[in-house]
Length: 240
Ligand SMILES: Nc1ncnc2c1ncn2[C@@H]1O[C@H](COP(=O)(O)OP(=O)(O)OP(=O)(O)O)[C@@H](O)[C@H]1O
Image (tube, protein in one colour):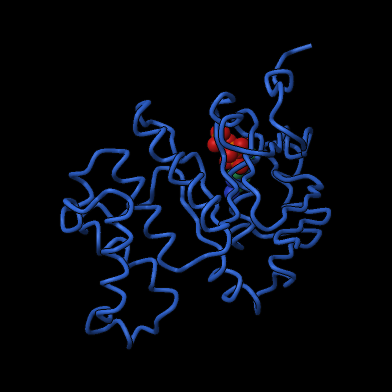
């Protein structure tokens, strides 16, 4: 089943670039795929990911998530199906790991429902997720005191607590050491293989991309210049 479709997607014209940031993007992603988005700095990777959760105004074309066209009316429903790991984690530093994870439930609860704290069920779920991601000892620790790899795992737990069908991850291992990078990538791989989560992630390391993803989409100047398997990705980046 096609989970994500972009038809002739175009964002607003960017005067600084002399073109739209995304310029006629067409792509289809099936349920259960693990896709890596590649491209040089400024190619439009983050903008493409952000457009899939309605964070970027679309000038032309359509986005369908789960068969539903993205409009102002459908966006709240679409956002419940799509979890996002922002570049740099996007955690609230002063809050504990568990409270950051609970923030992932805010979109599913009304203000009134969260006025007196989150329901016990949510707290148990947050705790279980952190334990599964190897953070049992860090549940009540402030996230500012955690290592980069631990913070990224908290961010993964926060995205997962809304039980998304799709996980978008913007440079989830940038700045992490080799071991932490592998841990994060292995978590993503397990979520994809064991739970069938559809994953689209921006990466800069071609070796890691080829190791984990089945499919690569390469962007250049806001356009898709390659969409295929991860064999010989280097060729896409070699100057001719
Ligand atoms: N809101 C905006 N207004 C104007 N230009 C923007 C805006 N957001 C992004 N851009 C520009 O659009 C281009 C694409 O940005 P984007 O962040 O999507 O690239 P990227 O491929 O993710 O790059 P990186 O690898 O550096 O993260 C860049 O040239 C950027 O300066």
